[in-house]
Length: 320
Image 1 (cartoon, rainbow, N blue to C red):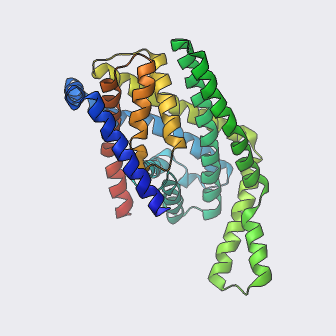
Image 2 (cartoon, rainbow, N blue to C red):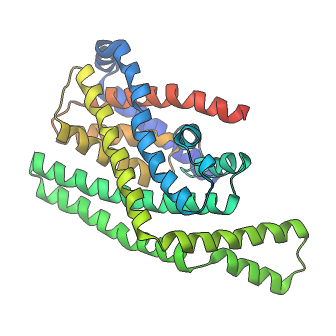
Image 3 (cartoon, one colour):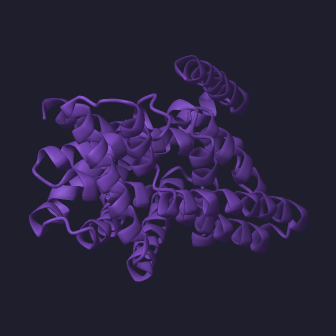
């Protein structure tokens, strides 16, 4: 896995550099200079989609029985910032942030099993929300460009992912993986006390997962919060392009945000989505009438926001 991440990072870096050189470094820097210090407004603006996402996680935590003192947005927002910063800035294949989030909230005093179950379910629902948001982006792309063949191919690719998501849901809901591991190990080994306690905790997570996935109303509310967070992220794209001197409509910004985020999430093996984000914004931007240098400049503006927003979160994580 480590070598795969390194190769993916190398390939992504080469792709990003190639796209910058092809679009022209001079024009890209000129666009960024046009926007200037206004791009820093993207940093506080990012708190909005993150807060909407936190509201979805809060609902799952409360449904799992986590005490109210641990589910206040003021407590969850810094943890969510750490989760996102780890996944966006570190080579962790888009999953290390969730593990860190579980540890942070558990160390604060919340019960580990319901916290873990809430994060597992949240990740599953995020995949579903991402598919729905990407489908909306494809339909908007079809409306704006009239490219029926391309839209059909993209929708087919999303449809092919649906059975995988369904299998993951069944595995989490009915697989009882941790309980099976516990029973299998107990049948063959005399477990040390600490390991036995860990496996019993894992079995408790299975029970929490079944209970949480048996509450469809809570799940749908979480999906709605997540979709609202994804849509709010399009405000960043809309504003940044206006400041870069290439204003677009809300529909165009929504299509760019949804399709680029989908590519970045599903090609998760590339650390920080390096090269993937740039290719997505340049490619889909071209289809929507956006010059290549504007697409790359937008990507660099987004990366600036990720670094300025994420590095303090990583520093706080290390201090705690």
